Length: 464
Image (tube, rainbow, N blue to C red):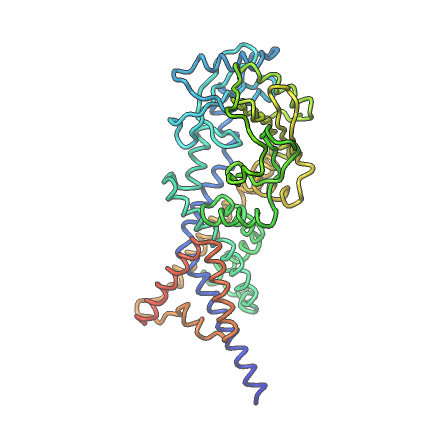
């Protein structure tokens, strides 16, 4: 009798868990599905636009004049003379190939979204080929910048970032829940092959496509969270606490040790209170008389130190107590993101960070982000992400069609999420609550939306 009772209790708890996951998966699809759909669609558009952007801005990005490049100092002078206002120069990207233009980049508050502007210079003739806002390490131009901000925040500013964080927070949970439902479906999944009702056909396509995309769903969700506001900050904090940070060069010339330091991408904003550990600084930092004239020497010093990628960026320092930074920015395969710090007073390399020496975790993070953006493997990466994004959109559409076909009639009995949770065993209840709290704290947007789910569910249960 005891064995039978335990068996029934276990079966009841298992059915309750199945019902709980089913309702949660339904809520995610119904309420979060539109946000995931928009994120997938805009992300797909972003991935397929590099070639379109290159064609659209061809006259700005390329030149027919093939000849010896003029010194960077002259190219900078040509760019500055074309400006109608005094803007701060913050970076230079020399022409990567013959026939390409050089980007002289300035801070510009009037540049929508990016706050940065590039003047494109023909390196051979010093002709100004164009003047456009640029954004990010990829240096995307206005078309892709607009699509990027549509993907990240629906062009709504910081408030819009909650939409993408909501989608990324729930996507991996929806994927895991879908696999669980498919696994527990057992014979029902097999029967769907034989029964030809429209609902079962949609369900079969939905779960088959979901299984095929499962790894990609989890990957895109996790990498997407690194850009989010709340969960992204928590991820950065976790990385710092366990040492999963990206190596970076030190640009401080006042310290004795100029070797590479381990730091997060935001290391310049950390540890401002640690000045007592630093050697005394000069009362006032001495400024360079002519910063523009130093670019060619800094570039040569970096090249001599092994910075050999075609695509690179030089970031100057206006004062002599800070090193200049020269960074490779080619994130295709093989990844070239080495960087060095150069003392422009002596043209010597004082610090370096080579991708080959990065810890494996730092490499995986770099590759994961670049793969998410569709730049790691070039066209192949674009094709894979395009297929993935469109398939995800299709799967969401099928999910809504399944719900519409089997939608409950008015006045029918519902199956609330809380009711299913109430049927769990005591151990299962404690575990689910602890998991919900942990996820809610680490991903606050998901936590708030889960509370909203529960309030809606409680209201439906009360009405029933």
